[in-house]
Length: 387
Image 1 (cartoon, one colour):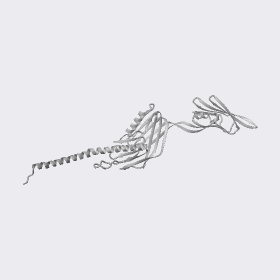
Image 2: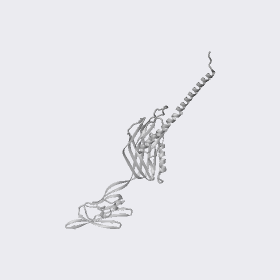
Image 3: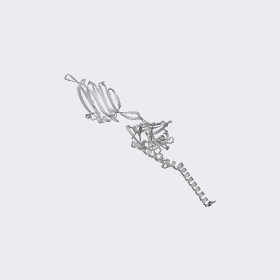
Image 4: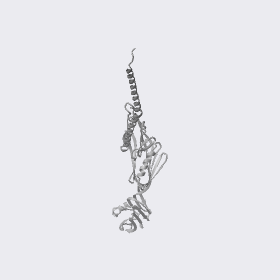
């Protein structure tokens, strides 16, 4: 009977133990890699991918076109599958800009045939017309600005010449305490006109700059025709809506391009992801907004999406105001935190003479500005398409 050497038995046992230890170490390391290292690497790659998406969205505003990476590759040998994302559109996001007591210059053409006094601006035409010329006419037309004025006084009387009745019109132009007199003669019953802005009267520049007109006549056959700009106060409103949203399948951070800013969405909350498109510049509130429309449905999968904004038209508005409000509404996304961040920026940077107030509801927030300020607003009407 052949025996086994004790040394050989010990050696065999040692080999098995060593192998077991190595296998256990490999299993433990593999578990640790799968449980801790791989998820961390995936999160790192997903975060880097999200930053690429952020930069792409910033170009969507600045260049109106960008390439948005929808997916990113996994970890080679361990988790190689690509993580996908999608682009979609949300029409339930809106901003409404309301401006109160806006100063507007309106072109006016006016005919006067009775006593009146009113304000004017930048008068371009002042024409006096008398139909059916007759005697005993009296007209007073005065253009004034501050303490200065120019007055046109017109009178008439009849003359007989060779059995023909004539009407002699006398025009007296009074300017700066000096005056000139002009005489015109027409046949009784004829029409007679005077252009007060004729250079011969040396008053055209003053009439153009005048801020007030007074007119009075004793004849229903005489008229004053004026063309000028009228200062009116009115309320106007503008709106922009829509959000272009990117969402990842395995990362909680998403981004949304709103009409007024780019935001980050995470865990049902929101925050500003870039400088807002509404800012105070000295005493002027500047707003450069995008009114988004979308005809693509949901774009998803791997690879990238090249998005181009087609501009149909843009509207711009510049004016002073006494009160202005910005109303932000969203019935589908929780934008409240990012809205409050924007409101804090606008409140802290508003001019000292502007009073800021805030109201909010479940899915809206409104910030109002009271005081003399200026608005410089542009609304781009754009449609997102694949290019």
